[in-house]
Image (cartoon, rainbow, N blue to C red; front, top):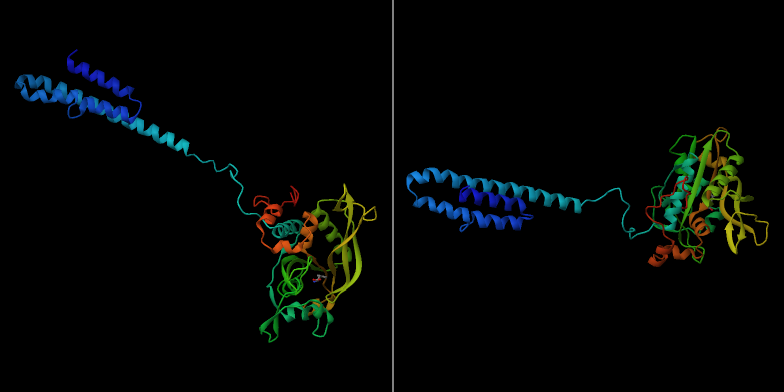
Length: 364
Ligand code: PHE
């Protein structure tokens, strides 16, 4: 073996052994750098006789080429390995749950609205909406509350300074019942809707805020009677409070837009020193809590919406959402709902990942 062959073999071994780009660069400098061993050999060609150069030239050039090719190949391999390692290190598994809980939380009112939508969707109800600034006609007149009716005064209505399209002052809706009118005048029966949303009355204490939330329910079809109303309310309340032993009490009442009308109480009892919805309301420390107003849609209301009351009947109910949330999740001051106190939201709020479903329990 000539010196050159030996040199070539040595550098090829070193190239193979180089574990990183720095080590490989050191081999390159030692072999092919300005003062590298193979470069020094190339310089000797100039001093050779033409015959000698004829034989030595291809040998030295061959060694230089072989080592240079080996270095390039090794460099490519090392770079590919480095990229693979980097990609493996930066791999993100999109199917993993979020590593930290999201900073925000879902307000109990929003959570309860989602629960209501889930429960009523299962019963075939769609979700309807209406404007919060209403005309007198939708909020009162069409609901059989004429101008002289005492119910107008009872509602502590907020009026706007400017008149609406019908020439009368607009109001901040005092209940979600105007959505009944908007639905009956825009859809054909059969109608099954709930309408959750904001409502306003000039009233303020521990259990009343000027803005609060209601959910309206409306069913219009042929042959609808009070039994349908009672079954629907019982099914809803049992699903919402997630107990089967809940009893409802329907008390005769009065609303201008329903006839007959009933206020609905839910039975509570005391279990392990705690008041709970459900159980025996006639037992020790048990009792009744009013949760909603309801009744059969008044023929004057169906007529005002252009429907024939002889053909179509229905029931409606209106329920305070904030109160439902308080009863289910145990808050006692309504005003705290709207204070925006982060500590309260953190304590009573729900995870954005906690989507109510009937199969997992609507309030899980
Ligand atoms: N709108 C009534 C209220 O706010 C509740 C209600 C709705 C009663 C529908 C009967 C039917 O008090």
